[in-house]
Image (tube, rainbow, N blue to C red; front, side):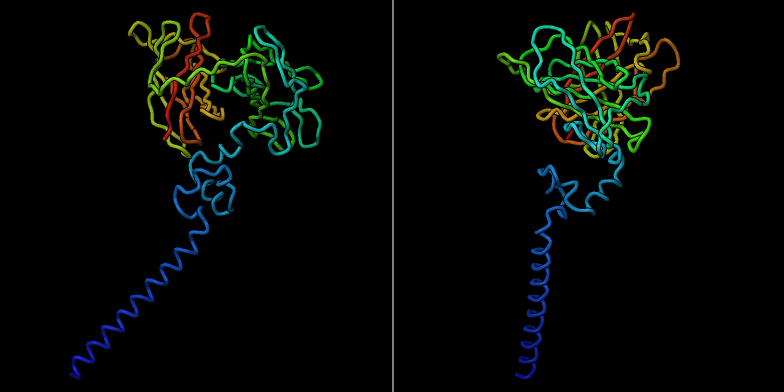
Length: 308
């Protein structure tokens, strides 16, 4: 009986120790659950997750490409004291119109000094909320810092207008900015469904194929190949300091991403394969717009790319 009693006491002691350990683990889990940022994937649904805690921001900053994306997704008219302003809240439909805007600095004064980016001091884009009607326009600046973008005919609906620039002085010197404002074009708007994701598309007799699988939050290479009549195209002409210009916009909110070319211009003709540095910060479908020039004609190809 003595041996049996000792065995029973030892078994009860082990059971008690196990219960205590289990309780400690449960309490630790409960404490950690109050901070969803500690659980992988839990912050994807929050627009403020990246800035919810210093540790989260620092961790994201350590990921390849995240420091560049910190400049924003272009969905605000203000960033780090720089502001995009315009008196135009509505624009007419069905005809060419001039959109006037100004970029002011942290001191409140109009910025007039901009660094060259792909041969231009300002890149300006117009896009309807359903990601149709893409326009990439080189605006002109007056001496007082007022920019004028000559927009082609707009259809009814809500449009977002983007200004992409790099100050060459002041606190924002050498930093990339993308700011935007929305305008309304009066009339009955008809939404165009976004085409399904695809790896290739056709425009003006050319076939454009995109290879690569971008991952959210990481820099990833993309290769664009251009062919015509089944043959590789090798007569691409330089356009904005490269052989092709690639821009992406996110479905639902029109978040902006500029995919930087890494293929160097080595002559008056290039192709068929072009390399790009892709940094797409949000899950979902992105509408890509590729612009390239042949025979003096500018072509714009569009396709939908899914980022998972």
